[in-house]
Length: 194
Image (cartoon, rainbow, N blue to C red; front, side, top):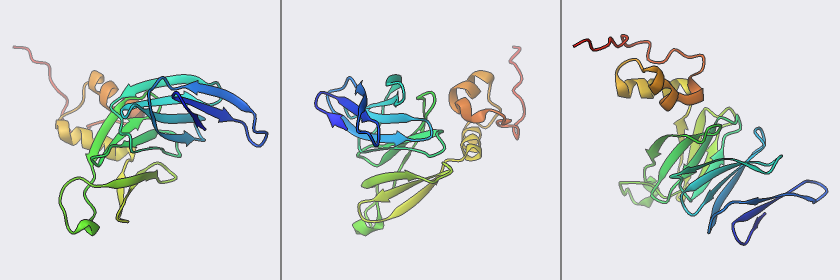
């Protein structure tokens, strides 16, 4: 339950006892999502700040800038969080670290008279396994986006066109690359000896 002043009260059910009051430290609370698997509350405040709170302890886990204020969704597997901005941009976040991983601009629904450009998306939903993100437009169109680990790794590798350095693996693939050989289809970089 959101309260005035950017606070959220967390209640125990079925007793109805308040167990935590989370001070989101923002002027406005835009959207909330709860992840049962990770016992986390995700909140977007001030139209740009994504926060993750542990609902068991009432402690802030992380805060990241650049979120969209229209929707926030946590995937059931506990790996991803997605936010939606008013211009139709979806940002995908690493739910553990708060790193913003990638974005996509959603197309306008054809129900808007064939208009081109970014879409008026009204909601986001992850598949139960977290491998797809579904976006729903105000006009009723449903689109599916692949968020599987292998798809992320292939997308990054294809963009770079070579094997990633350790620093790049840590920065761009974060926890999703554990146990994967990223960009093995490309030859290893040789150091410049000139």
